[in-house]
Image (cartoon, rainbow, N blue to C red; front, side):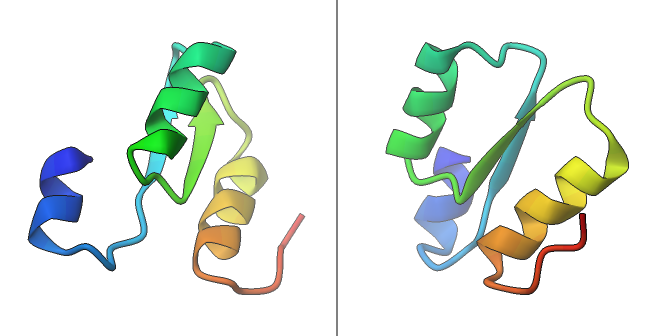
Length: 60
């Protein structure tokens, strides 16, 4: 994510990880993630996170 944002500071990055602890989520958001989805996830949860990152209407 850091590399992506270094190449394009306006990129919208939604992180997905099996390590969805509050500390990991805060670290990712602190580094500039537009959202975070913990694995395992339902498809609509990921779609909602992407929609929110892009400021689109939420699907779920």
